[in-house]
Image (cartoon, rainbow, N blue to C red; front, side, top):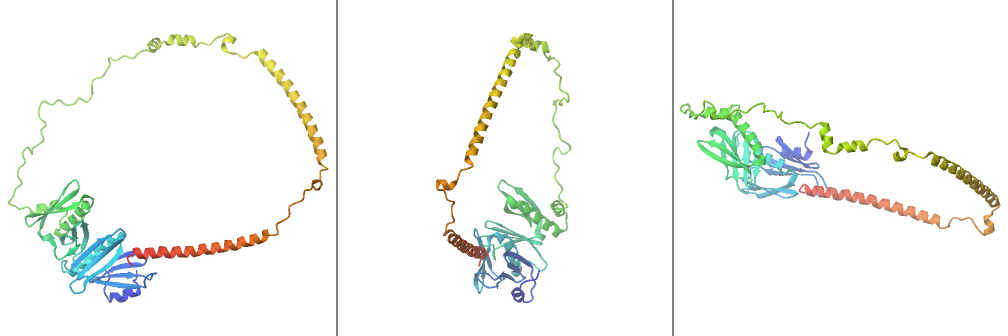
Length: 374
């Protein structure tokens, strides 16, 4: 992807080592000597490029909820600052720190900065040849420590409830560094890979073995010949004794114990129709005859009612609305004017809504530009 024209001019022949998007069309570019921040044209500013050389003596970072400020202290120019969205801070810190320690001569040509970690006031920088440690409010300044992999003979990790101790054996002395548990696994992976790759071994155990003195013999561990479980311990039986003494109750015993015999006798159906609740034939015939009489009566009444309705309809055929003074409604002469006025008002409201939409888009763009540190 090609850089904007103003960035090409600012590069002046330098190559881009890394780039980080800052939101919208804004972009941060890292070169071997500078950090360039490209700001696209917006509501608050024109298109521009800001340059921050890497020969700073101190780098301080102040993180806020929305913006993060990078402050670089120079021996002659004093302090220069730039702000970026906080959501991009972690992606920006690593290349900027890499550029600064490279310009300071901490890393050598061909050395790669692999990872940068910030744990409160502790900064760890893992490169392909060394581990750089800085303690203090600044992310980096001239008060730092470094441990070259040439001098590291062992690496172990002691996990605690909150933090993990990174223990390096350097020139016969242990260097301990605390890393939070949520990031300790990544530190262990990156540092172990870098150390083993530098020494050309496959694992830390192999590195440890290679650095052991040939004169030292591992102390014989007592009881190394096997594991004793002691005497007098009976082996567990695979098949436990069966419980054949238990007897199941027969179905007859269960019925007798629960009074089931009487229940069975009571449940036998009775042959007496009166006792069994059978329907009465005489009553059914009576109800049927009564129903027939009632149906005929209803039909007679229905026929009478239909005749009356026919007569009433015949009388209504000669009804005239004008005889009672009824006149059909006429259209209101003002209704047309009201409809035209409503149409005009609707057009005005739609126009206002369009203007509000444009204003809302402008405000959203303004907020976005402000959040990008403009």
